[in-house]
Length: 259
Image (cartoon, rainbow, N blue to C red; front, side, top):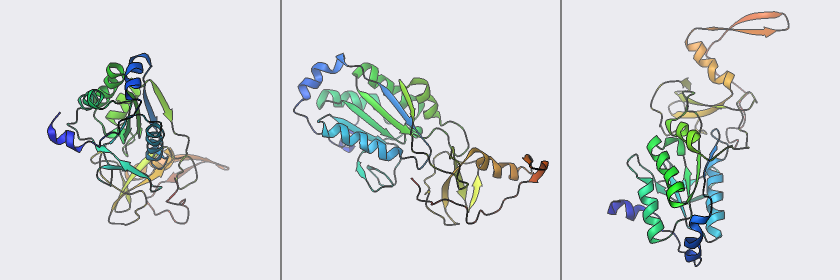
């Protein structure tokens, strides 16, 4: 691990129970747990809660994130934040964890924005669990704005000991449960582009990249419209052909601050 990387890590508080943790480390069953949900489902909030709960018990916990608007911290929409190490594509998570185990002790890693970790970094987290007996709690999205699994998410689903969907249900503007994340550029949904572009779910500026929550139907709807496709929908008078058109949705959208 480079000197610069070592200096960038938030220093863990040394617990008075450190030696006890070391004696019992290999006897407890550590796990890689993956918690997933859409935007607005409280992923960062729960990551911060787990980090708080573990540290207040005197455990040594490392909080990491791949992306956050506030450099060097994980923050939630509720205004809660904590110091964190920012993970880059070159970060070796196993090496960092091994160093912390030796020098300060390490009981758990809490990972925010885990969908952006590389598949190799997800494998490193699994090795942290298996080789160092350190618990890992990973939080992230399942699918991108393109409707496909993130590479990091796919590897988490393959390797995690436990997979749990967050129970806070975000809603589409139609009121149905949101299952997809939509990227909007100049107010119009797009389906191509880089996987990682910082945007704001609350930013309604026509000139900005923003994100909205959609149910599966409304995530597909603009795609079908852009392709010039028609959709058969059943009505009380039989099957009518409804031509899908791109238009602004007015007075239907739920509170954009819905968490």
